[in-house]
Image (cartoon, rainbow, N blue to C red; front, side):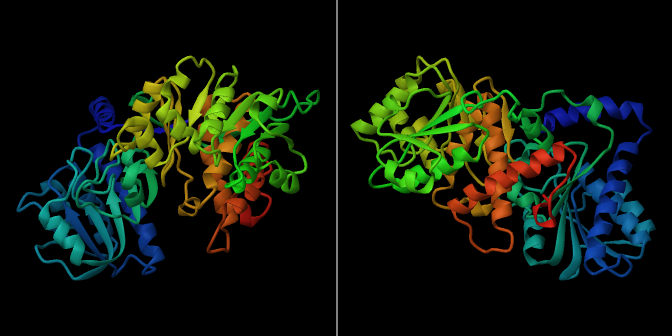
Length: 490
């Protein structure tokens, strides 16, 4: 499990490491890694370093020093480097002197365009928002590529919020560790491609980062493969209480998601049974959750309705001492009847988008999405999967996870129904609530990537159909077989 560390945690790690190094060595490590990343970008466009135009926006702190020392290395290789102090005459003096010695120049008026703009304005100690001078320069410089130094300047490093002007980078070169802004909120969208430079911090970082990030290896290790002595019941039975006469598609999509998971048996309960039977012959259908029989986990809510029937189905599901996923109309009902969760001892996973979150919590998630998800998880003693371009999972014990596989194509009708069914199947197989939520978000992101290959549009049905391939890709890497085709390389 990887993670993202707060600015305070990174500062503590740096303070432990620096006395063990020669003066300035930590900055030189960062600058070397940053310069190497810039060289890679320049080799992509314009195709060479020599003669390329580079503009550095340099703040007065260590972030500006990293940028200036890296720019000096580019100038030594023949790049035309123009460094602009963005806070009056204040500049990281040793870095500026190194740049000038290498052939670069300090200037108040940079060229109107460049091949590479190096954002060294603010580091992890900076407040959100850009100085006016920096904001003006960024607005009028025509840069082919923008590389941020450690974090995009102007973002809130610890929450990922972007309350004011901030840099939008094509690449962010982070030193020592990810920061929360790289994986949370709007700041994650402004990070671009993240490159990590090892500067020796790892042994000094807190063992438990405030934001955890699952990898393919984690997902594969959690996955329960069928055993030789398994039958359809021991693999897990998942119940789906979803859909209605008005919204039969929600039932079909939720069942499709459940069938893509590891459970061996899917039971459907609801008014859309005829639609489910036509499309999913393997599914056993009943009219209500009370009639469904033996199950190990449930999904309840998508397209169910919020009338007395919907409330009765939710009560029936929650009365069973097994894990449950609550989505869509189920979340609206929980917002009206939160006491339904009061006596629960088994795992509950709530999967709200922002408007559903507001119904549950009383206010929208706001800029601090991780904090908001954690607060709701604690209040309701459950796991919360807060949907968004960078989905956040918060467990009731305070653990927070960020998912990095989300894609814009997931913002399509029915994708949440697929996610809910798939998540419930993971719970039915024995995976705990937080891991199931993390794995479901991760693999759905991979599925939409596979489904969108060579296409401009993707539907929820496409995502459900691609989920088994996404699972297979991750598990095949665990087994050492690698991807089965170039198209599935992730």
